[in-house]
Image (cartoon, rainbow, N blue to C red; front, side, top):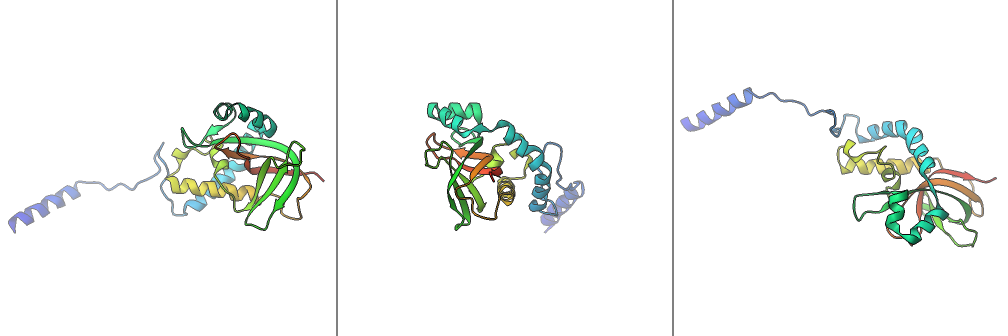
Length: 212
């Protein structure tokens, strides 16, 4: 009994000498979850960066898809090093900012993951697919701009994944929704993720202009 009391007193004295400090968002550290939640923080981040930083970055760095296809035929990795960024380090997909004009030859809005197939070179075959939403696959918009969305600035992979979804939702919310796009000429800017040189680009567009 005396031994137990001695141990208990020692623990009490040790705790009394400690100062409990609340974990905060120190300089250079990833943020902790705030009272408003991840969604509020990400919404504020998109308000600050989407139109002011992401869209201008894509406009300035986008490679025309015809040019990209030529470079991909030579080497995926060399094209990636010159024209894109790599997601997830060695072995990850190459993310490319892209642009093009072409004719929409097929439109699918029956699925939640709506798409439009675009013929860019005029041969009647689809050269790229635009994602129209509401469901958007991948995280190309997030990963194409590591200078804007730095993983180290986020609490964990979960919060970073929420950012990817929020960016996709933001992009498709601005797309033309009324009327069919079938047969119309479209000019777009966006981002795509490629793992092989022969893969048809699946693009998340941030700018879509439909010819009258």
